[in-house]
Length: 209
Image (tube, one colour):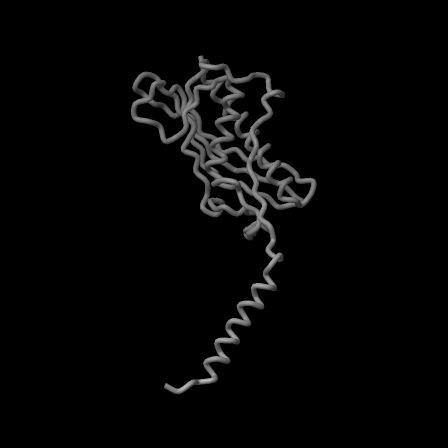
């Protein structure tokens, strides 16, 4: 078998390129930041959750639009254009985090710890009295400008074996942003979820005997 010098040169060149590329990449990778929505500060609200008391509320399903249903944080650059931030991630799927924050907020606002999260078990120890389902249509922001939340929610009331939809709303909330940081944006988004939670809580209180 004949020795082909060109093969050796080609192999050496590939090894050099890989090694050189590795050296360039060392220490230059941008770190990834992770964010979570935060619940209401219960110390500044009028009521707190009571152990084993309060209405039995089901929360969910909470659905998030596909463009938001990703690990990366999404911001808006114009009415029709969005930006996906590759180095700024949610700490967990957005719909899961949003559901958890709604549960914590409503627990405080309605003074109950008897909240069940969708999907519900077929045989539950506590029969539901109310259920709230949420479709998140828009939940993003333009850094340095404002954060926005547009959602449609439904509240159902259970009486015996009957379930009746008593409320359908599509509120819109927004909050100005003091700077362009994503940390400021996420904090404002938490405040918008708090606003949504307060409105839902007021609707349930109005429907309660």
